[in-house]
Amino acid sequence: MRELDYDVAVIGAGTAGIAAHRAATAAGARSVLIERGPGGTTCARVGCMPSKLLIAAGTAAHAARTADQFGIRVPDVAVDGPAVLRRLREERDRFVGSVLEGLDDLPEDERLGGTARFESDRTLLIDDAIRIRFRAAVIATGSSPIVPEPLRGLGADVLTTDTLFEIPDLPASLAVLGAGAVGIEIAQAMARLGVAVTVIDAGDTVAGLTEPDLARQAAAIFASEMDLHLGAEVRDAVADSDGVRLDWVDRHGRDQVTRAARVLAATGRSPNLEPLGLEATGLRIGETGVPDFDRRSLVCAGAPILIAGDVDGWRPVLHEASRQGTIAGANAAALVAGRPVATPEPWTSLAMVFTHPQAAVIGAPYDPEDDRRIVGALDFSDQGRARVEGLNRGGMRIWADRSGRLLGGEMLGPAVEHLAHLLTYAVADKQTAQAVHDRPVYHPTVEEGLISIMSKIIQRS
Image (cartoon, rainbow, N blue to C red; front, side):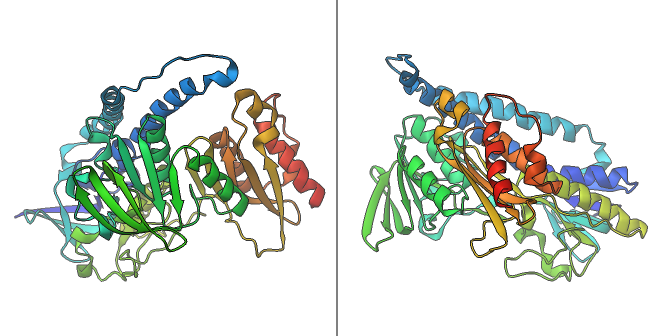
């Protein structure tokens, strides 16, 4: 067995792992990056990039079909499913290739392929062929899609984001389990590409929205494009001659049946921890199987091991994974050198859904019981630029404390990906509604709606 020694061992070459290795090396630690494959980051390979390519195709088809509102007549819209998926994969592979090129540039002694397993709190085994002694380690192994129990006997008829983008053609019909960010994005894109879509979710909200009025609007908007069922539970799923038969119970307790050519499991992701043998490390393992860790330093309790990215289950989005990887790598090097670890403040939380209308949740969560808050509301139905574009659906809810300092909000509407960033920066900088209101805003833009809602908060503060 080969014996190797490193200051820092980073397990996983995704967004967090690459950032951790880079930060540890920059801090002077001799670091190795271990990847069992396929690599290329979840975002580029099976996450944000291929899903946005599917959304872009659906948006193009929808724009052609709905051009009539502007007096533009498009007599026929034909969707070439294989061509849609071929472009998706070609562009996806470009994104993945750029990530892999960066990994190929690493010196050979800084990168190892294989499956890592902890032998102790100071040693790792790689495929039982290499033993690595380390002084600190970073777990950055990512996560995998969860397939709910009723779907586990369906074989290839059940899709996840790991397999969806490899199908050769669009299915005639698709059942989607889960109305969160991934489920509703893919459901709407598929519906706009001509797929008959049914969405089933046990919860009462869509796209992560929790403010009741926005959640109701979202459910109504998305239900106009697909068969949407909230508060429903799938009891059984079997393959039949037409694809898949789902037996489920609706929110009123009535038995229902849905048949679809394929079914997509979009009910969340679980951390990739099982192969690691964490029981050998002495770490304290929580109820979810994730080691107890400090959310600022990312150091786990019980050993010189840190955790970063989707595997920790805290904020599974790319910008957080990159930042967590950087913090974990630098802190791993600090542990090796005997220096204090850094404990930076967490970023203002930002979650976004790229449906149409877009949705976002920013900062402090919605809390109807907090009477110390001022809540400002805006309806996009009569917002000038939104009406010009024919995108006047949804609204914004933004909350502040009694002094007018902005705390967070939820959004459903046009250009939300931009509005949400503006609010995120304002919350992070502890700005008041007055300070945001006093900034210049060009006319006519959707951003004027943000200024309108600031005026309402100012009047009440």
